[in-house]
Image 1 (cartoon, rainbow, N blue to C red):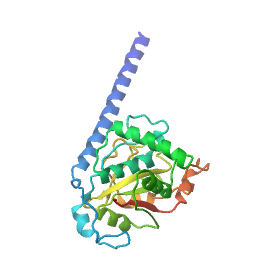
Image 2: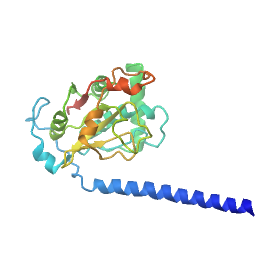
Image 3: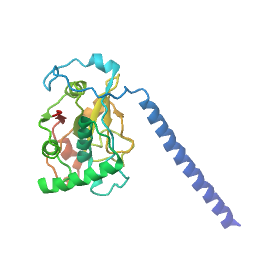
Image 4: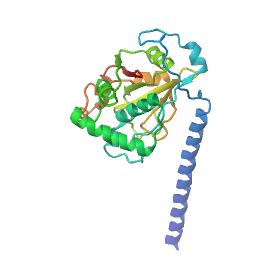
Length: 263
């Protein structure tokens, strides 16, 4: 009798725990999707000659209305397999998304998976590795693999530098310490080194991103100061992070962004 009561109690506990988890995650996702409803409509605004990487454009008029470039989205693990190489494919996927934006091409899990694997294979021959490519190495990928004639890697950037590029119709790729952005959808504590695409600005001045590090990363909004503070380029690509404090190593990297110009 005692064992039966214990079994019943245990079963009730398991069911209630499952219900709690389901509703907790479901409510969090519902709130997350609700927040997206207020984002600017996606646009294919193309670069204007009056903007340049050195221009100091006032961002206020557009920030109030918001801007959201129509960069397609894929998570870096298109079929939910986070084993290698997908675990380290944030740089590849971010580059693929920017390429699809400029070519006005859609992306599906099948396409993303095929292109990630092809690019990883190319990197192994080009660099000797594919893991943790720096901003400069990712720019090489965009030039040599995707064929873009102008790809700038800008260091010592400011938030206004990023916003000026977005206002000019150019999504940017940024390297960062993924543990500093506080994304609850990352496998915790988050990636030591990560890349994502900044594609827009909300009316409040926050950054709209395609964060390839989570399946919920499409139009993911980060507080602009939080995201900017997290931006750090890897000092060297392809390395196993120094222990015991790999974050300190990444934080020693420069602030950088990759800007691709359409051919």
